[in-house]
Length: 345
Image (cartoon, rainbow, N blue to C red):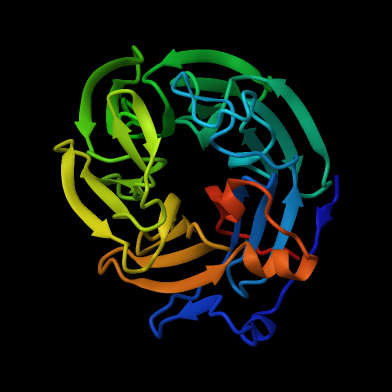
């Protein structure tokens, strides 16, 4: 499986009629490579120095609402999930990518070799390397379990029941406590990591997705784009999907309660995952727009100001003549992994 190169320069993109790229004067100079999973079955590859764009094809396309979420069939026409990537963990030069059908595939960035590691769960969302670096943890939207995947043995090591439809996981600095986001219940569970037992929960109050701990381990950022309404019967697609109150919810890790909410409705961005710069001053947001694009945004962590937006989907699709056939014609980005020390050649 070869990496398919697009390498679109910003100068050319700027000539497009629509505003695909926006930047503020205080946008940071970054170095590294971001890998963003998407429902199209490929990873967007973004050079953070030049903002050039490539992609890596992993599987075929698939929608998030296909198959089962928390025991419910949201898309009656598709009882079984199709393809689609939803999160990837970067370990060395290997990307361990979780799929919407619960499989894991490994892609080596040097050899471009794609290896199918088999069926592990049911419907994966996040993919996060755990404390100690021996395991990757995949959160499952179908059964609410967290799957522990041993990197060296390349196989499932444990299954941790948590909620109904889990999306993200993060740990305290000492690795003794874990936080797991439950999408349909709109809450973050707190786990004693030694026993893997729930010791608390933090209500967020809206439909949520993935979570990330800031480098200082003082704040937990929760994506709360609110594109579904949570009811007693489970998640129901909102009539204002794409126009609702999109938020980033910030949890105080020590107090284990919500300390702030960042409203992104005016920006028309619906974040799904985060990646903090190593110094903690900025955070990358993989954002859906529920129109004809998805965006990689850069936010100033202190001011909460969006200082840069870069088109991730539309500029590739237009060049390749791709027309979106799923998700109501909207390309949807998901999890993000970043190599902060290396730009693609």
